[in-house]
Image: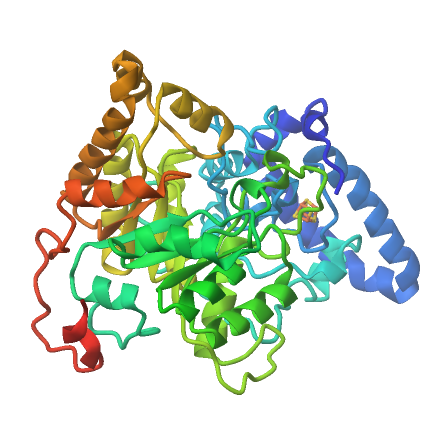
Length: 176
Length: 332
Ligand code: SF4
């Protein structure tokens, strides 16, 4: 895993992530547009489409989120903060090792991904509540494939056959 | 909580169910291949505890495995808690280990994320973290309840576990920690063992949020406590051990104590904290972690008035008789 704590602070990226509503809007628009385009592109050339998506995700999401190309993107459920930047790859919340200043146990100069994720998701308009979802185990076979394509094909929603999903049964009213 | 059938019929579960204030303690796994080293440490703990946690490479340092310790402990009739961390094993190894543990008579399992390899003595090791602690909890619960592996393949005989998880109410993001607990409860946790509690104010606030969600009625919460040997030990723990929060007042208090009485003062602080957390609604027990000072555990438990064990304050026997747990009356 490439650990580039500073890469998460490429010019502008941190500012943008601190305005999760903008990213949310971009996500919703892209989903609508790409969702229309994708079937046509696939018909033209599945190979090139895959390549194009992978390359663009590596560039764009790499720049903004230090995307690790897990292929199962849950950015909008984690306050637009990529959980795979957590050195322990935690997708369901922070570990118990977070430092008193809110920084990572493993990389002291990096703010804990989950401290940022909770804070940012509380400021989101549509997907803020999704941080309460219990995320299933990651399909490691999808590494370095396109998360967008996996979403359109429904591949990213597949869980291990024995997995039984659960949801949080708590009132969402009140804090936070 | 008390109307459910027993999960695994472990002693820890029965103690908690019966409304007694539970005590668990951490066994420091030896750097040795001699079973006597495990038994020697276990003996002093077993007399005063309801269950013994066998750590799984705590602090990412290599010691005898939790599996090994648990095998020895069950053989001798002790009640262990198997600790499983996500750091060293992938989902295939973990599911296999869970079956092996159940076959050896292990009934309590604590599912952990695990300290990172970089804090241990072999930082160049590969970290695994294939599952996270919540996915691990869920996997164990699925194996017990659905009787399948994650792959969907059937188990001839599913294991029965009383499942635990860790919680750290003392580090950021403080205002969301109770939601993390809610996830663990939903994923299948029956009991919780927390990180060291040295800051009663933060803990009270945390428990208030936990009660607001009604979680204290769905899960048994055991508060982590432990003695500090000196202000140097405290300083070491709060700077070098991940996730330990010790407020300045406590370090100051130890610093002001004359050298000969420091150990005594550390134990006194620990006993005071136990007395304070006992009064908090929703606390069901304590988990004593006394690194390399097992002998103090008995002293702490005696001085906190936890031996012999009594009912939790404010606890009332459920009105409907719990017919699903005939052993209830036999808890020692
Ligand atoms: S695809 Fe995976 S690694 Fe990339 S940003 Fe999304 S969650 Fe992170």
